[in-house]
Image (cartoon, rainbow, N blue to C red):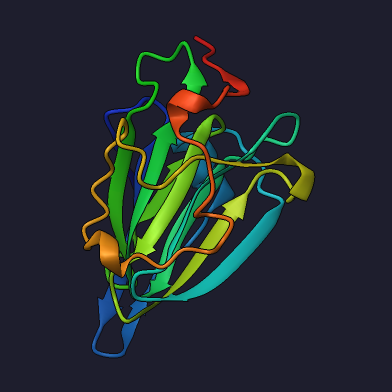
Length: 187
């Protein structure tokens, strides 16, 4: 049983599972194909990924280019992150706009990012354990990304820029205005 919260960008949704708790702890279904298909869409996930990061680590804004595009269903097992999806579909009425959500090990929220979006997150807690499902396998030759601090997108990462820790690769991406998106908005 899930509650789906629509966002300002069509197709990007926040999912809240029904959590059953008592003095022993809690239980919830972290994923149900039946519920997901009924309330979000018919997507077959083929790969699960997990990362562990410290405060200030920012991973993103990543995507995979066609023909290996990915939709992602992300969540935090432990800790706290701000998770972001940026619309990079040419012709989209929300091109260059973003949606962000705070995901924590306590709120159990999940964030669905469809194909055609760049994705990233930054860790707000001391550490975070982050998991996500993808509907396409990882293909290194299809990697793509845009800069995390693009001034035209102006993402509020909720921590000082000086606290951001990037990989050397994530420090060298193009800004959205300098990049030719491989995605086209499909009504």
